[in-house]
Amino acid sequence: MNRGNSRTVLVPGRINPRVRERLEREFEPVFIDKADPGLMDEGARAGIRGMATATAISASFIDAFPNLEIIANFGVGYDAVDAAHAASKAVMVTNTPDVLTDEVADTTIGLLLNTLRELPKAEAYLRAGRWAAEGAYPLTSLTLRGRTAGIFGLGRIGLAIARRLEAFGIEIQYHTRNKRSDVDYPWHETLLSLATAVDLLIVVVPGGAATDNAVNAEILDALGTDGVLISVGRGSTIDEPALIEALEQNRIAAAGLDVFANEPNAPKALIDLPNACLLPHVASASVSTRNAMADLVVDNLAAWFDGRPAITPVPECKDLNKGN
Image (cartoon, rainbow, N blue to C red; front, side, top):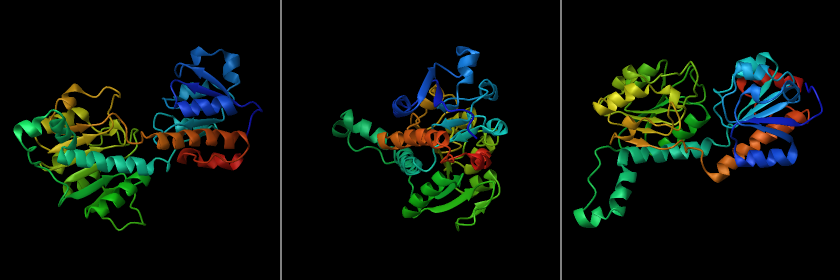
């Protein structure tokens, strides 16, 4: 339920430029350098009804704003926002699902092919003049042909990836907490069971305590020496030291990563590995997709401030929509 008539929205830290532009046109935005309540006095904090954010929002930060009603998160993943605490305070949290699903799935396939067929290395070989000077690029030892893919996290994005892999003639299996009733892919109750059954593991689960370092040395060893790991969800889901060791020792064949535990700092040991293909978290990074995400952030705020239900509430906050 609305607690005031102002349209004051706080932006802690950096935000997509389109979000900023729309907020400046449609709301009363307040910008601070980071999510630190000490950067605002008590009176200013009391005037904040909404937040637009692409940074971590803790329980204590939420508590610093007594009239806060909604936090609009830029991104489908919202593990950096304490949504459970927000819900306990009757603060709505929204994210940006669906609008980035196809872009992330497309990029995942591109990362997979780059990892297996070494396409970035082959292009660098050509650009360096080595094709003319030394002959054809060496045959790649890895291929997508004949592989069985395991998808860890068969949500919107995971399912879009699976549908694309089907077109390549690849068998799909998956692991989620609960078996889906709308797909025929074999389901594994545990991640270890899935990794044992496949030789291509695609990780697209959200971050958080439940998935922290879920892909560890045991999972990598189960994947095997011909196994390939692709990660496009959250960097926290991969035990990076264990992955580096597995790649160095050829206990798995290769890995393609778009996300890292401490972004933007990818470990130098990973960068130096010839069997790692690395991208700087670009899975949804097209102008059109990021614009759609930005619009959904602001549209959620607009709906809420107009007394309508939020468009894309996160699961923890769905019941709060009944009161708006």
